[in-house]
Length: 275
Ligand code: SF4
Image 1 (tube, rainbow, N blue to C red):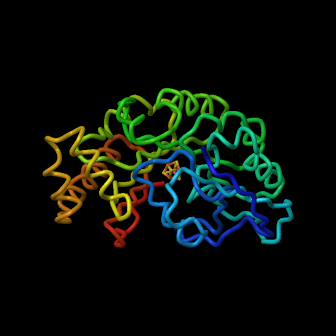
Image 2 (tube, rainbow, N blue to C red; image 1 turned 90 degrees about the horizontal axis):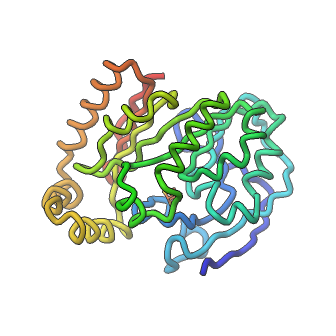
Protein backbone atom coordinates (compact mmCIF):
# COMPACT_ATOMS: atom_id res chain seq x y z
CA UNK A 1 0.00 0.00 0.00
CA UNK A 2 1.50 3.31 -1.07
CA UNK A 3 1.33 6.18 1.43
CA UNK A 4 0.08 9.23 -0.47
CA UNK A 5 0.43 12.79 0.84
CA UNK A 6 -0.49 16.06 -0.86
CA UNK A 7 1.89 18.97 -0.37
CA UNK A 8 1.39 22.57 -1.47
CA UNK A 9 4.19 24.14 -3.53
CA UNK A 10 4.33 27.64 -4.99
CA UNK A 11 7.01 26.76 -7.51
CA UNK A 12 7.56 23.58 -9.49
CA UNK A 13 10.92 24.56 -11.00
CA UNK A 14 14.16 23.59 -9.25
CA UNK A 15 17.51 24.97 -10.37
CA UNK A 16 19.25 22.17 -12.23
CA UNK A 17 22.61 20.61 -11.48
CA UNK A 18 22.40 18.66 -14.76
CA UNK A 19 24.64 20.07 -17.45
CA UNK A 20 22.68 21.70 -20.24
CA UNK A 21 19.48 22.16 -18.21
CA UNK A 22 18.35 25.29 -16.39
CA UNK A 23 15.55 23.72 -14.39
CA UNK A 24 14.26 20.35 -13.23
CA UNK A 25 10.62 19.55 -12.58
CA UNK A 26 9.59 16.70 -10.30
CA UNK A 27 5.80 16.35 -10.14
CA UNK A 28 6.12 13.93 -7.21
CA UNK A 29 8.49 13.18 -4.36
CA UNK A 30 9.17 9.47 -4.22
CA UNK A 31 8.74 6.94 -6.99
CA UNK A 32 6.61 3.82 -6.94
CA UNK A 33 8.63 2.24 -9.73
CA UNK A 34 10.78 1.25 -6.76
CA UNK A 35 13.92 0.43 -8.74
CA UNK A 36 16.33 -1.33 -6.40
CA UNK A 37 19.27 0.67 -7.78
CA UNK A 38 17.63 4.11 -7.60
CA UNK A 39 20.00 6.85 -6.45
CA UNK A 40 17.06 9.23 -5.94
CA UNK A 41 16.28 7.64 -2.59
CA UNK A 42 18.73 10.17 -1.08
CA UNK A 43 15.82 12.63 -1.20
CA UNK A 44 14.20 10.85 1.75
CA UNK A 45 16.50 12.59 4.20
CA UNK A 46 15.31 16.02 2.98
CA UNK A 47 11.60 15.24 2.77
CA UNK A 48 10.59 13.69 6.09
CA UNK A 49 10.68 10.15 4.73
CA UNK A 50 13.69 8.82 6.60
CA UNK A 51 13.36 5.11 7.32
CA UNK A 52 10.52 4.50 4.85
CA UNK A 53 10.99 2.00 2.04
CA UNK A 54 11.72 3.58 -1.33
CA UNK A 55 8.57 3.10 -3.39
CA UNK A 56 6.24 2.96 -0.37
CA UNK A 57 5.33 6.66 -0.41
CA UNK A 58 4.71 9.59 -2.72
CA UNK A 59 4.15 13.25 -2.05
CA UNK A 60 1.97 14.81 -4.69
CA UNK A 61 2.92 18.38 -5.43
CA UNK A 62 -0.09 20.66 -5.44
CA UNK A 63 1.03 23.45 -7.77
CA UNK A 64 -1.55 25.98 -8.90
CA UNK A 65 0.17 26.49 -12.23
CA UNK A 66 1.56 30.00 -11.85
CA UNK A 67 4.90 30.19 -13.65
CA UNK A 68 7.15 32.48 -11.61
CA UNK A 69 10.43 31.78 -13.44
CA UNK A 70 11.60 32.98 -16.82
CA UNK A 71 11.59 29.70 -18.74
CA UNK A 72 11.49 31.11 -22.26
CA UNK A 73 13.87 29.04 -24.42
CA UNK A 74 15.23 27.33 -21.29
CA UNK A 75 16.09 23.61 -21.23
CA UNK A 76 14.03 21.81 -18.62
CA UNK A 77 14.33 18.23 -17.44
CA UNK A 78 11.32 16.29 -16.15
CA UNK A 79 12.14 14.48 -13.91
CA UNK A 80 15.23 13.66 -11.83
CA UNK A 81 14.11 12.18 -8.51
CA UNK A 82 10.83 10.60 -9.53
CA UNK A 83 9.28 9.23 -12.68
CA UNK A 84 6.62 11.58 -14.10
CA UNK A 85 4.67 8.52 -15.26
CA UNK A 86 4.43 6.40 -12.13
CA UNK A 87 1.15 4.39 -12.01
CA UNK A 88 -0.42 7.00 -9.67
CA UNK A 89 -0.12 9.58 -12.46
CA UNK A 90 -3.04 7.84 -14.17
CA UNK A 91 -5.25 9.00 -11.32
CA UNK A 92 -3.67 12.28 -10.19
CA UNK A 93 -2.61 13.65 -13.61
CA UNK A 94 -0.04 16.05 -12.11
CA UNK A 95 2.38 15.55 -14.99
CA UNK A 96 -0.35 16.22 -17.51
CA UNK A 97 -1.35 19.38 -15.64
CA UNK A 98 2.26 20.62 -15.75
CA UNK A 99 2.54 19.87 -19.47
CA UNK A 100 -0.64 21.86 -20.09
CA UNK A 101 0.90 24.83 -18.29
CA UNK A 102 4.21 24.53 -20.16
CA UNK A 103 2.65 24.03 -23.57
CA UNK A 104 2.67 27.66 -24.61
CA UNK A 105 5.87 28.76 -22.91
CA UNK A 106 8.48 27.97 -25.60
CA UNK A 107 10.67 26.05 -23.16
CA UNK A 108 12.63 23.00 -24.35
CA UNK A 109 11.45 20.04 -22.34
CA UNK A 110 13.08 16.62 -21.96
CA UNK A 111 10.72 14.08 -20.40
CA UNK A 112 12.46 11.09 -18.77
CA UNK A 113 10.50 7.96 -17.92
CA UNK A 114 10.48 4.19 -17.66
CA UNK A 115 6.79 3.97 -18.54
CA UNK A 116 4.68 3.87 -21.67
CA UNK A 117 2.05 5.96 -19.88
CA UNK A 118 3.80 8.89 -21.56
CA UNK A 119 1.79 8.02 -24.69
CA UNK A 120 -1.35 9.26 -22.95
CA UNK A 121 0.03 12.81 -23.25
CA UNK A 122 1.18 12.58 -26.84
CA UNK A 123 -1.48 15.09 -27.87
CA UNK A 124 0.21 17.79 -25.74
CA UNK A 125 3.79 16.65 -26.29
CA UNK A 126 3.33 16.96 -30.05
CA UNK A 127 2.57 20.64 -29.62
CA UNK A 128 5.68 21.32 -27.53
CA UNK A 129 9.41 21.59 -28.12
CA UNK A 130 9.78 18.30 -26.29
CA UNK A 131 12.04 15.27 -26.40
CA UNK A 132 11.09 12.01 -24.73
CA UNK A 133 13.65 9.77 -23.09
CA UNK A 134 12.73 6.21 -22.16
CA UNK A 135 15.17 4.21 -20.06
CA UNK A 136 15.90 0.49 -20.24
CA UNK A 137 18.84 -1.55 -19.04
CA UNK A 138 18.42 -4.88 -20.84
CA UNK A 139 15.94 -7.04 -22.74
CA UNK A 140 15.68 -9.72 -20.06
CA UNK A 141 12.13 -9.12 -18.77
CA UNK A 142 12.63 -11.57 -15.90
CA UNK A 143 15.67 -9.66 -14.65
CA UNK A 144 13.92 -6.31 -14.98
CA UNK A 145 10.76 -7.46 -13.19
CA UNK A 146 12.87 -8.49 -10.20
CA UNK A 147 14.51 -5.11 -9.75
CA UNK A 148 11.86 -2.62 -10.94
CA UNK A 149 8.06 -2.22 -10.76
CA UNK A 150 7.92 -0.74 -14.21
CA UNK A 151 6.06 -1.57 -17.42
CA UNK A 152 7.76 -4.27 -19.49
CA UNK A 153 10.66 -3.49 -21.78
CA UNK A 154 8.46 -4.48 -24.71
CA UNK A 155 5.87 -1.86 -23.78
CA UNK A 156 8.55 0.79 -23.33
CA UNK A 157 10.12 0.10 -26.71
CA UNK A 158 6.72 0.12 -28.39
CA UNK A 159 6.11 3.50 -26.80
CA UNK A 160 9.38 4.83 -28.18
CA UNK A 161 8.42 3.55 -31.61
CA UNK A 162 5.04 5.28 -31.47
CA UNK A 163 6.60 8.52 -30.25
CA UNK A 164 9.06 8.46 -33.13
CA UNK A 165 6.27 7.72 -35.63
CA UNK A 166 4.50 10.78 -34.23
CA UNK A 167 7.58 12.88 -35.01
CA UNK A 168 8.90 13.20 -31.45
CA UNK A 169 12.67 13.35 -30.84
CA UNK A 170 13.33 10.07 -29.01
CA UNK A 171 16.17 9.25 -26.64
CA UNK A 172 16.90 5.76 -25.37
CA UNK A 173 18.76 5.83 -22.11
CA UNK A 174 20.65 2.62 -21.41
CA UNK A 175 20.62 3.00 -17.67
CA UNK A 176 21.90 1.80 -15.45
CA UNK A 177 24.36 -0.47 -17.22
CA UNK A 178 24.79 -3.68 -15.22
CA UNK A 179 28.34 -4.99 -15.73
CA UNK A 180 28.51 -8.19 -17.78
CA UNK A 181 24.71 -8.25 -18.13
CA UNK A 182 23.71 -5.19 -20.16
CA UNK A 183 24.52 -5.66 -23.83
CA UNK A 184 24.50 -2.10 -25.19
CA UNK A 185 25.21 -3.16 -28.77
CA UNK A 186 22.24 -5.54 -28.83
CA UNK A 187 19.98 -2.76 -27.53
CA UNK A 188 21.20 -0.30 -30.14
CA UNK A 189 20.94 -2.77 -33.01
CA UNK A 190 17.31 -3.52 -32.15
CA UNK A 191 16.22 0.06 -31.57
CA UNK A 192 18.14 2.39 -33.83
CA UNK A 193 15.31 2.54 -36.35
CA UNK A 194 13.24 4.60 -33.92
CA UNK A 195 15.81 6.21 -31.63
CA UNK A 196 17.46 9.56 -32.38
CA UNK A 197 19.98 9.57 -29.57
CA UNK A 198 21.43 7.21 -26.93
CA UNK A 199 22.41 8.04 -23.37
CA UNK A 200 24.54 5.76 -21.20
CA UNK A 201 24.74 5.64 -17.40
CA UNK A 202 26.69 3.15 -15.35
CA UNK A 203 25.42 1.32 -12.30
CA UNK A 204 26.69 3.41 -9.42
CA UNK A 205 26.16 1.64 -6.12
CA UNK A 206 25.98 3.67 -2.96
CA UNK A 207 24.44 2.98 0.38
CA UNK A 208 21.67 2.37 1.33
CA UNK A 209 20.93 0.23 -1.76
CA UNK A 210 24.41 -1.13 -2.47
CA UNK A 211 23.92 -4.23 -0.30
CA UNK A 212 20.55 -5.00 -1.92
CA UNK A 213 22.08 -5.11 -5.38
CA UNK A 214 25.11 -7.07 -4.26
CA UNK A 215 22.81 -9.62 -2.60
CA UNK A 216 20.63 -9.75 -5.70
CA UNK A 217 23.69 -10.57 -7.81
CA UNK A 218 24.86 -13.17 -5.28
CA UNK A 219 21.44 -14.89 -5.32
CA UNK A 220 20.81 -14.75 -9.05
CA UNK A 221 24.17 -14.46 -10.80
CA UNK A 222 26.58 -16.01 -8.35
CA UNK A 223 29.15 -16.49 -11.13
CA UNK A 224 29.37 -12.68 -11.41
CA UNK A 225 29.59 -11.92 -7.73
CA UNK A 226 33.40 -11.71 -7.56
CA UNK A 227 33.45 -9.38 -10.54
CA UNK A 228 30.83 -7.13 -8.93
CA UNK A 229 32.79 -7.21 -5.72
CA UNK A 230 35.86 -6.06 -7.60
CA UNK A 231 33.98 -3.17 -9.20
CA UNK A 232 31.75 -2.03 -6.35
CA UNK A 233 33.61 -2.96 -3.19
CA UNK A 234 37.25 -2.85 -4.27
CA UNK A 235 36.32 0.09 -6.57
CA UNK A 236 38.32 -1.11 -9.55
CA UNK A 237 37.30 1.27 -12.35
CA UNK A 238 39.01 -0.56 -15.24
CA UNK A 239 35.76 -2.21 -16.39
CA UNK A 240 34.06 1.17 -16.72
CA UNK A 241 36.94 2.86 -18.54
CA UNK A 242 37.12 -0.01 -21.03
CA UNK A 243 33.36 0.08 -21.51
CA UNK A 244 33.38 3.85 -22.02
CA UNK A 245 35.98 3.50 -24.77
CA UNK A 246 34.05 0.65 -26.35
CA UNK A 247 30.85 2.74 -26.41
CA UNK A 248 32.64 5.71 -27.95
CA UNK A 249 34.28 3.58 -30.62
CA UNK A 250 31.03 1.80 -31.48
CA UNK A 251 28.84 4.91 -31.54
CA UNK A 252 31.36 6.87 -33.60
CA UNK A 253 31.66 4.03 -36.10
CA UNK A 254 27.87 3.79 -36.34
CA UNK A 255 27.57 7.59 -36.52
CA UNK A 256 25.18 7.78 -33.55
CA UNK A 257 24.34 10.71 -31.31
CA UNK A 258 25.17 9.88 -27.74
CA UNK A 259 25.92 11.01 -24.21
CA UNK A 260 27.93 9.09 -21.61
CA UNK A 261 27.49 10.01 -17.97
CA UNK A 262 29.54 7.71 -15.74
CA UNK A 263 29.92 8.16 -11.98
CA UNK A 264 31.83 6.27 -9.34
CA UNK A 265 30.43 7.08 -5.91
CA UNK A 266 30.59 10.87 -5.65
CA UNK A 267 33.07 11.15 -8.53
CA UNK A 268 31.66 12.06 -11.91
CA UNK A 269 33.67 11.57 -15.10
CA UNK A 270 33.52 14.47 -17.55
CA UNK A 271 30.36 14.20 -19.64
CA UNK A 272 31.07 12.78 -23.09
CA UNK A 273 28.64 13.99 -25.69
CA UNK A 274 28.29 13.77 -29.43
CA UNK A 275 25.23 15.78 -30.43
S1 SF4 B 1 11.94 5.07 -12.30
FE1 SF4 B 1 13.74 6.37 -11.96
S2 SF4 B 1 13.22 7.63 -10.17
FE2 SF4 B 1 11.79 5.91 -10.22
S3 SF4 B 1 12.65 4.39 -8.87
FE3 SF4 B 1 13.31 3.92 -10.97
S4 SF4 B 1 15.29 4.96 -11.24
FE4 SF4 B 1 14.27 5.83 -9.41
